Amino acid sequence: MDKKSKITMYSTQWCGDCVRSKKVFEKLNVDFTEIDIDFDKDGFEIAKKLQNQNPRIPTIVFEDGSFLVEPSDIELINKISSLKL
Image (cartoon, rainbow, N blue to C red):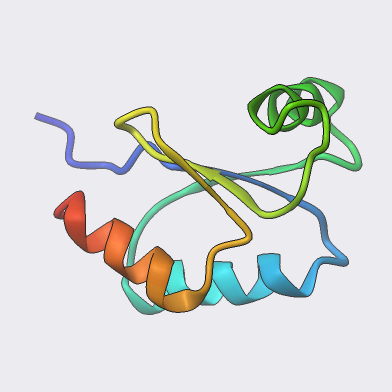
């Protein structure tokens, strides 16, 4: 069974919260896919749909279908821990 994480983070290069969330993933050695919504129109539309047409970043979608928007480090760490990644 493939243990690779199926986490997608919708972000931009200029977003400080996105940089912070990436550091959490790196510190915990958790794989994720990053989609820059400044350059990926489909990604922008997905983030927009998840948030009732008002996309905020980062939007992080987990393999269980849940997602977090602009999570604090603690929220993100707790979510990752709950998924046993």
